[in-house]
Amino acid sequence: MWKILPEFCQQFPRYERMGLADLCQYVHELYAKYDIARLSTEIYLSDLQPAMKPSDAFAHIAHRKTERVEIDHLEGRITTALITPYPPGIPLLIPGEVFNRKIVDYLKFARAFNEECPGFETDIHGLVAEEGPDGKRRYYADCVKA
Image (cartoon, rainbow, N blue to C red; front, side, top):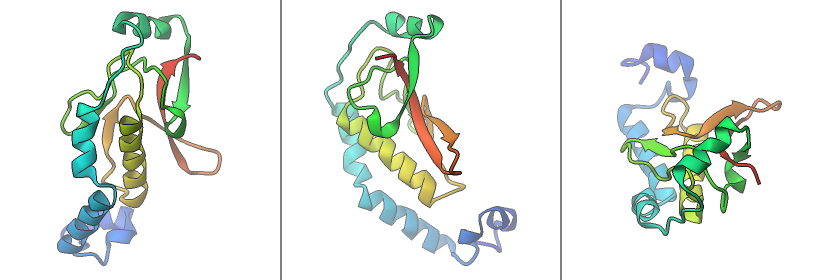
């Protein structure tokens, strides 16, 4: 990779001795490990539970009645924002819907992928990354305050 993307490999030395085929195989194995083909279908077919109207959930932002919740604690919580992975750019949740296990599993995959493939991070609108005091990135979503 260093021959075709020298600046990238300088920023992310883990890829320096990888070839493009190696990188593709690495990413493929990661997707297979988390069974993303199945999971990405199941998240859109999962039982989505509206807990309130989108306008009511969104209003919690204006009234400062939200809290930032880490991925591991999202199941059963109500989102105040769109949760949209890119690609494909189709929302998983709209404000007022409840995080279910399938969606949380997908967000956990995104976290693992971002840790294992720096430089190729997933883009999920509504998922906030913050660096903790230990230097480790943590991922959150804004929810209706419990």
